Length: 265
Image 1 (tube, rainbow, N blue to C red):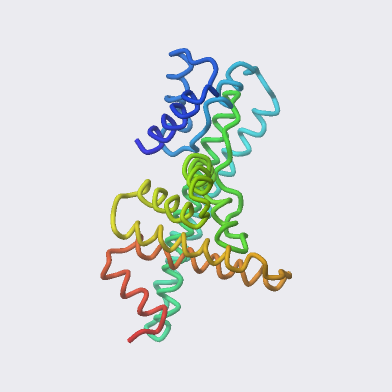
Image 2: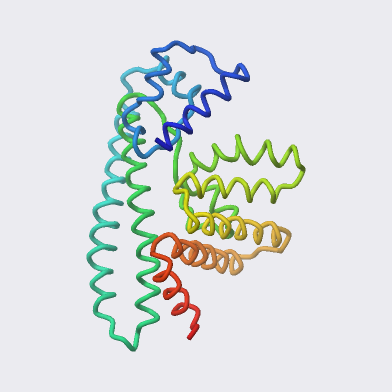
């Protein structure tokens, strides 16, 4: 329902501003019930969908690229997600003894996040690939987010169809109206958090993402080098993984994980 609702918010706003053409019922239903993206996205846009509909034809390049993306998707899900992370890494973690408790907890923490990422990214690749087989170009959802050197860049590469939606319809109007970019960031990340689940842990998670972006704003004028970029990537990866602890576990378990990782007795 969350994907369906966001698609219709997009359609309603664009229609209200007169930026939607071909508003026939057939086009509207086809857009809302386009099977490849119906369940897990990406949150594609109506004008691009209709443009592809009108230009749709047998395209060998689309077929080749579509099968390639489907193969990539299944590789991420089955090889990286299920085999390497679920089977191999889980075996390594379970074989660690109590003297390596910190390492065990840390590996479990990043394993949960990476598994979720590769599953979701893999499903997005499959959805994009099937769309290409049908003659439609659906927007990308991920662009190597863990190679980002700050949290602002991370969120421009992670779940891109959701973040671009929130940028266009939440952040930009609020930041322009109030002339306070960080207020727009806080509200935007709160919406993204509640889009996932309306709970206190997700609100905390959204606040942590907003704080990470604030840090990026704070240090945006700092001179960059190859070393600082790589250190930034290490920070982004660990910051995001640690922020996800609050939503990956029950509250008591999450607190225990934080105590272990930050050496709190």
